[in-house]
Length: 144
Image 1 (cartoon, one colour):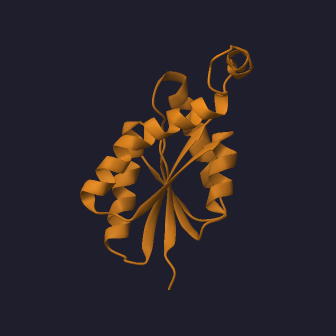
Image 2 (cartoon, rainbow, N blue to C red; image 1 turned 135 degrees about the horizontal axis):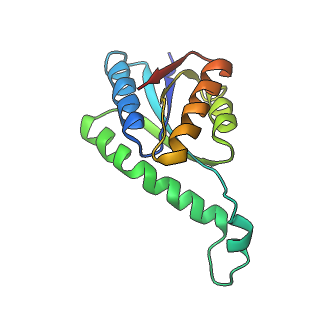
Image 3 (tube, rainbow, N blue to C red; image 1 turned 30 degrees about the horizontal axis):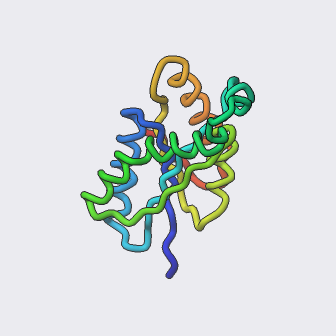
């Protein structure tokens, strides 16, 4: 049987770490499961301004690099636990990207935190979690 993936969107928050720990425990009990970590970088208001500055990397490269930096501590944690996983950084609106990724790659479930990293982001990711839970093509587990 091919591996089925549990999609875990992560953003550097404590809730995302708890979601990852929960998903890792599911994988530990089922050898047919693997984790797929996802970080979604949303191009911001200043993207077009920064793109115009000479000598700067294109915004997409900067956002991918930022996503990789967010993923790094999760990768370290998973490697230490010996958990099978893959990673992806995608650009776009978090809700749309998470649902799109959940509909592909043999995704069995989404496990995600209910709140984001800081301030308004906390509210925004909470809203994203509710949207994903309501419309994802696979079951969604939300972790506080």
